[in-house]
Length: 259
Image (cartoon, rainbow, N blue to C red; front, side, top):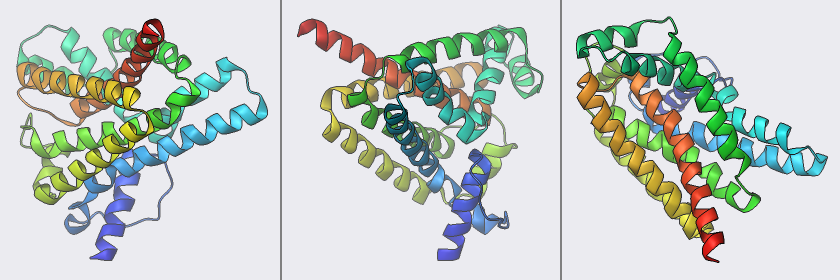
């Protein structure tokens, strides 16, 4: 059992990150608990963000470089796999075609004009928000990567699937969904508790943003695609990691005004 869990952890990091892992067999048994380790990638990203912030302060790095690196740590740690899903989804949604055609566009590997436009807008917004993440916000900010992956994993094992074949559908068939669901909920509770202990205001604001985008994600997926797939899960995760710090920054500004 221990070896199977270690292999599941290695597969999770190999699938959803660029962090080097020892090679292991992608058997059905080893795939059963992969999603249990998905939030661990978020924990590593959060640790890297805190580490970079401390290093930047020690070196006296200027704000533009500090913010850009902080913003891009999740991208380089994951290889942009979730951003790719977000952009495919943006192309499909922007087509305003019938559901069958949107699903075809979603599977198209070519980037359309809307995907490029959304990518530019996304990174401008992400830079602006990250630039306003203060030092006292950073511990809560670092934990949002665990929250986003816990919620994304819950959607994979709980939401209706767009089609019976594909990565997400195949994974759901092989996974121990009940145990994974409980595990991810435990991660989520622990992360939320930690955020509230660190700073109740930022924790509440971040989770309000997370649950808002999670509800929107479900509604969007059901209405436009009849279910979820890997691209839509990437859409959610990417947007969640923009909306959560945005709500934190908004809460900070409102609290400062109220004084």
